Length: 109
Image (cartoon, rainbow, N blue to C red; front, side, top):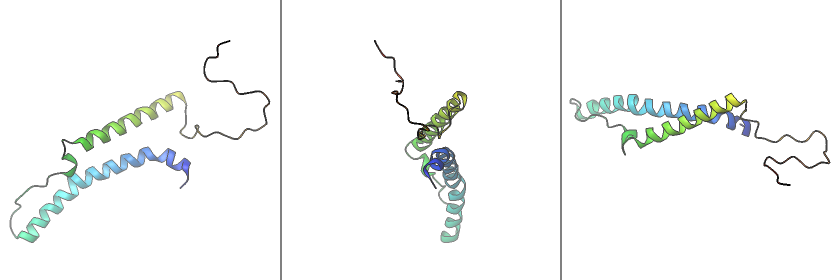
């Protein structure tokens, strides 16, 4: 995996990771918790599953929502402005130039 792949795939990777964490914490672990109580205690379920990601007031979900929201907004702005994620890399010059590059800031005379 090269640097260009990482630049383009980190947003979907973070989203899929968050979906996987939520699925495991809210679907898989509660089922396993109940099965484990029934199997090992040989009785009815005594305690319900307490989701790990909701500890600390749900700060995990708030922070992941902020990260995903800001990156989605940033990507939307990139698409509107016609910027690609790989355009930040400098291409080698095709022909040598003798004049200096034009500055990106206002120049006072």
